Length: 480
Image 1 (spheres, rainbow, N blue to C red):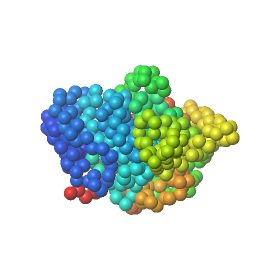
Image 2 (image 1 turned 90 degrees about the horizontal axis):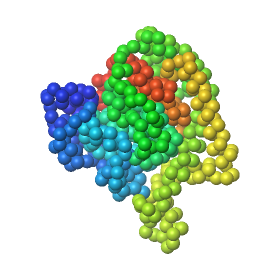
Image 3 (image 1 turned 90 degrees about the vertical axis):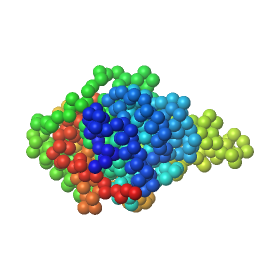
Image 4 (image 1 turned 120 degrees about the vertical axis):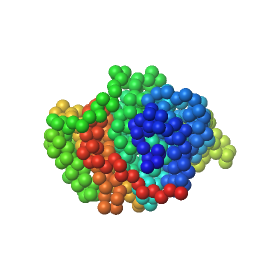
C-alpha cells in the first residue's frame, strides 16, 4: 500500500514516529496525481510547486505535512479560484478563506483546487466550464456534485482528504457516490468567510475523508467562531475526536416513513436497512416517525436556493472583476453579453428561475410560501429530536449513474430528496459507506443530528463504520 492510500491519522502516526518524512508523503501523492489525474480529472489547479515550498519549512500542528485538496469555490490567496466558471477563469484572490487560514495554522499542505459544478450548482461535476470529473470506482460514472472533484480526488488517492461545500447535499452526495465519509456541519459552526456563495442561508463548508476519524480530526481544525462571518456561531470549541468510541447502546434512532415508503433503487434501500438492523443489534432503539413536510423539501430548497443565487451572482457583470465580453457596443450590451458568454447552462437556468421567484408578481406566491414551509419543516425536525438522538436515511436514492444518463433537470433535482432537509433545517449530517451495489458502486447511509449534535453523529458513524468494516475497500483504478 502506498502512502497516498493512507488516512490522515495513519499518515500522522508515520510522520510522528519518523518512519517517513513530509517530502515522502507529498511525493507519493504527486506521483498518484500524475498517474491518474488524466482519467479522473479531479483538479482545476494543481499547486505542486507551492506544496513543495511549504514542506521545506518547519511545519507544526495537527495536520503537519498532510496533503489536502480544496474545492475551487474557497478563496486561496495568490492561487486561482474559479468556481469552475469561465466568469472567474483567471481570478486570483488577494486573501484566504478562514478555513484555509485554519488549515495553514495546523501545518496542512494544499495540493490544489478541485473541480465542481459551476458555482456549486449541480449534482454531477459535469456542469464545469473546464472538464467533467469522473468517479474512480467506474470512470463511466459521475462522482456526484457539486463537490465531485473533492470526492474523486480523495477516492482516487490524489489527496488524503478534502474540503467541500454543502448547499443541498453537495458534500454528502459525492461522498456517497465515491465510497467516502462526508460531513455537513451545523450551519454557523464553520466560517463561510472566503466562500464564494451560492445560497447564503444554506451553504456550509465541511470535510470529505476516507474514514470517520479523519472527519473528526478535520472538524476540530475548521470549526470555531469567526468575527468576519456574521452567521458564525459563538460556541465552546469541542474536541470531536473524544466521540470516536464504539457505543450505540440506548441510542434512539428515527426512520422517517416518508422516505422509506418511496420507490427508489431497492439495493440502496436494502443496504441502508441492513445497516440499521446492525445498529439495532448493538443496542440502538429504532422506531419509525413521520415528518410530513419533507415531501415538499426539494421544491422549497430550489425556490429558496435559486432566489439567493440570483441575488449573489448579480455582482458578476463584467465591471468589477472576472470575465468581460469584448463584443458589446454599450454598457447594457456589456452586462448582457458578459453574463450570456461566461455563465453555463445550469447557472443561467437557476438565475432565471431565482430572478422570477423574487419578482413582484411571484414573491408572495413562491418565496414567502417556501419560507413558511421551511419554518414548518424545521419545527417538525426539532420535534423528532425531542424524542430521538438521530435520524437515519439513505444519502441518495440511487448509486452513481453514468455520465449523461440524466438529462432532465427536474429528474436530477430529485436526487437531492434525502439531503436538502438538512440544509433547510441547518442541522448536521454525515454519510458513510454502508455497502455496494451489484455493479460494485458504493452506497451511502446518512445520519442526521440536532443542531450542534456533531459529537453524537461521529459516535454513531464511527460505531457503524467499525461494525460494517468497509473502510479498506478502494477503487481498482489503473495507474500508469
